[in-house]
Length: 267
Image (cartoon, rainbow, N blue to C red):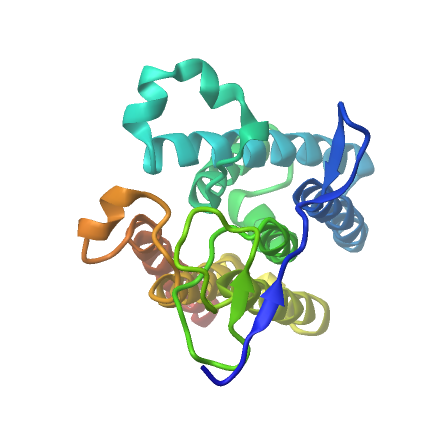
């Protein structure tokens, strides 16, 4: 082993005994707060109202939490949660799936666009993916602070020994897969934000959304090869559940990119 980083961070920032503030909760909330201010700037630039943004925020928070929780329960542990349905509501016990959040957000934004005059589905998708990328950055940092979704063993000098991880043995240096994904999604946020502010890409409906899906889920497929599987049944699969669920999102992204280009060229 060439080197390693000892990662022994407590998931809790502080505790009052009956209540604790966790890093994951802080980053999750911070994602929504920063997203709100960025979307406020976007809505002002595009001549939309703060009332519309308030409605959008409600849709997004509800869809993200419900979608992520239901997605985890039924994508990864359906047999358990169908036998213990009340535990689906126990979000505080952990278990959120980004693919579930994606489905929830797509459905919520479709409803939002239908109930809001002058806003089309692709228009809002192109803008919301900017802040979704930023939120994804913070959520993966939360996973890092929780020492969860760890990578496979590695001899690379930046390997992390996750002392707080009680699920994977032996205690060896592993890929900090959460950090890889956090950095990648932050770069995606910067690219999308730049394209929106400095180019005419926002006029090509579906292009920003297509770039987001193609980039994010292609990297997700790649990073899953470096990560430990989340549930045992994935060990018998050629691709794990995260990769399987990512493939149609990459296809959707490529379709949206080509479709936006065809419309732009008048084809």
